[in-house]
Image (cartoon, rainbow, N blue to C red; front, top):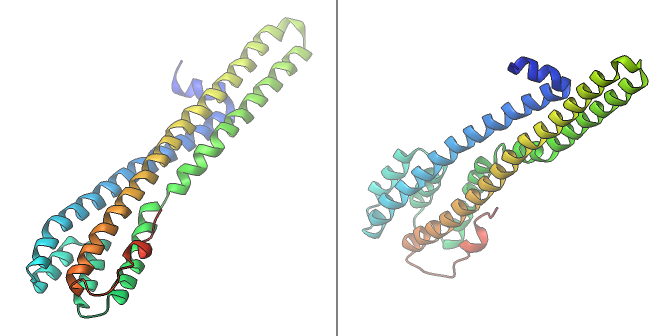
Length: 215
């Protein structure tokens, strides 16, 4: 059986589930690429920036942030540029930039969540249509009933399986990226706290843990 014949047997619902599957795979690949870039940039920034700040090399620190070309680099560059401001103001700046990073990380995750939730129901809808087709076959001439029953049952089973096939990877990917987002933001919270401590000399109470956005 060719792919086209397989899709034809499943009916229009299976074509819809195929589209959902392609959309899910596209989002997963795109998010893997984006998360990989963000994690590499943050790792490089942590490795290069903190030693320079500890030596009070402000210009070199800003250059490192600008060359990083990321939201995190931009965030720290602005914080370093405002060295001498109060800790609360620096924390507020970090907080605003952190929100932008959170939005970037969570972008398109709602698509995966939606697909994970609705595709089993789409498959169930196809199953119901297959069962209806089966009973419709039974109501027709007896000589054709066996073939139509088999066709209807096959359509029902195909759509059920396809719905689960699309939903399971989407749910797994959504949970994975949600956990990755949480880990990145918690790591950034620690780094931003250390950067602010170095910029302010540790003067005054820190509220970074309350400012950095959490997933």
